[in-house]
Length: 376
Image 1 (cartoon, rainbow, N blue to C red):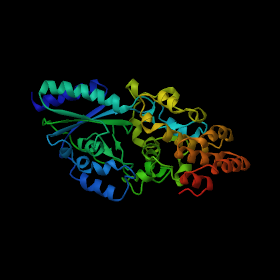
Image 2 (tube, rainbow, N blue to C red; image 1 turned 60 degrees about the horizontal axis):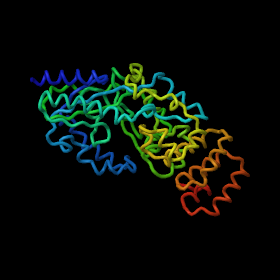
Image 3 (cartoon, one colour; image 1 turned 120 degrees about the vertical axis):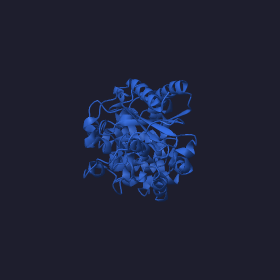
Image 4 (spheres, helix red, strand yellow; image 1 turned 45 degrees about the horizontal axis):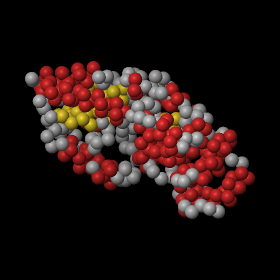
């Protein structure tokens, strides 16, 4: 089988599985990646994501991850919202929480990896080549590779943008030791647009094309394990898992389409879940509600921490009754967030009474600082 024919078969198979666009690049196509990654890490912009440093060498060069790799196939799958205005409109509903669009149904890692494995297996059987499949969890720099393959370009918000698909899409990859014809790289089409930079509620972009995870709501609500820094709590609004602002305002999303894969289409109950309801989830209920969802990965304690911040930002005093029981939670990170939220919602006398009662038995220094209003 010729490389050209093998590529055609692979692309057709991937598209039959629901991938909206598929492009091919060489394993050595991102020579600038090691230096750029080193600069990012040295600046500390990866925050507490130590795994980025631990996997730096493999992440920067696909040939270190798998020395036999010659070709990398990048496959994009849409997950866009049915209503393009909904992600920003959801931020105005203070009694409800906002979940990033990609996380409103099944875990995309499982959905996409399953499809990639099936396609890669069929391809290997036909060509007798070796293949490896990756989707986001492995140390693969999908966005620079996607740009090199012509799938899109890294916009000023650092996400990949496609002229055909906008930016609401996942990227999976198939590595192979077979030489396949590479596609041409894409060029930058952001122009003078600054929408994504200007809308960021926490100023997480120190410069165009540069993200500081330490200020990013997606990082803070998903990867960050400790208390949410005080300066970011108000800007979080009702976002409890991720943030879509920089994607939602991108003009190229006029070409985006809604998710075509049923498992990636939003579950109705996760479009605008009531904050009061979420505050009532214990660990068992949390696991049941988010079974099969990427949200389950952060665990109940981090999740409730986020919901408490949303409650504190709601300006709905009635939610104080749902917040107060969390002052006695077993986890300090939950108790601390509850103290902050109660301060925002309760009448001064009620807050003072709660502080007096709980400070007396509080043993965690971080939570004591929350109560005293001196948390870092």
